[in-house]
Length: 387
Image (cartoon, rainbow, N blue to C red; front, side, top):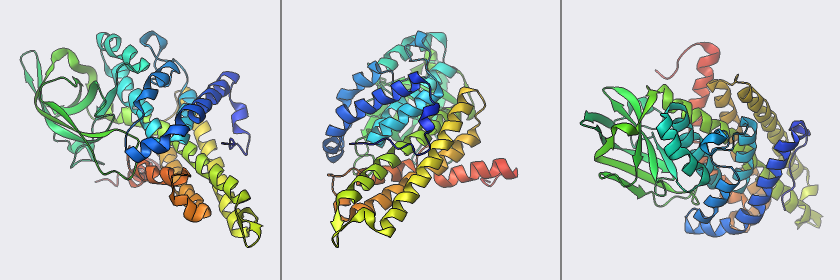
């Protein structure tokens, strides 16, 4: 059983509606997701049967206006949703995060009215699934070096190139693909049935096993004129999408950390060694207090970041600091919790090892720990350390 972690009563500052939504998502994770995740993790597949439920609960496109099928709720609610979903598994949060922040957000922000009407309602309901194609096999942290190209042709464009580590790539009905057109980064909506577009599953993952990950390839793939995002020009557009996703990750990592802390705490109270509960030993208490200490700081960071975002004051470097801090914190907590669980902590009877493996990916994707360090570093010093 999960006991909510809120040592500083942070969530009391939420509205009644926000707390109600948080409780409903927590119940969904407890009742519908946690009983099945160990099996799906072992098999290395995403539980697609839950997608319609995610849509019904408004978890796909939380901040997208209702007129386009979204929930039209605040960024704080979006953060709370991602926190509760990642308490279940990073793969579950990744699915919702990609759908909302990396697919629906660019269509809503940079798309035409026709594109919004065509795609957003289906994506919000989960009847349609999307993915985001930016990262390439040879260009991860440096998306500006992308080699995927688009050439203008009669009635549209011809795409050539490849994208790697694409969440939802095998499931997607449409891919938001970024390519250089005359040297300028542009966004394209590419349906899965387009000739020359293929997706290949990434195999052998030890992390994010219950998440669909693919490599996308484009070989003389024709994309019609109406499928280019008219308002997306330059690298700033895909980076703004990443910023939305990173915001959700900052909250989500707190959920994973809370799951590990809660499991280690309850285990330590009932596990006995040398005739005493493991929780009674000083070193164990130190580990648990450090976990609680870091979770509380991360919660405060998220709460303030959410307020900044809802008031239109959050900047990309604010998000980078939160993503950097919270994911690093969560991975440290997962490792510490695993040590309290001892040998039992490496089995799927406990969830900590699954979170620990997942967080190794979360530390890397949507900007590595080092990249976010340099983003914040450039802001506070005025010097660009990337070049």
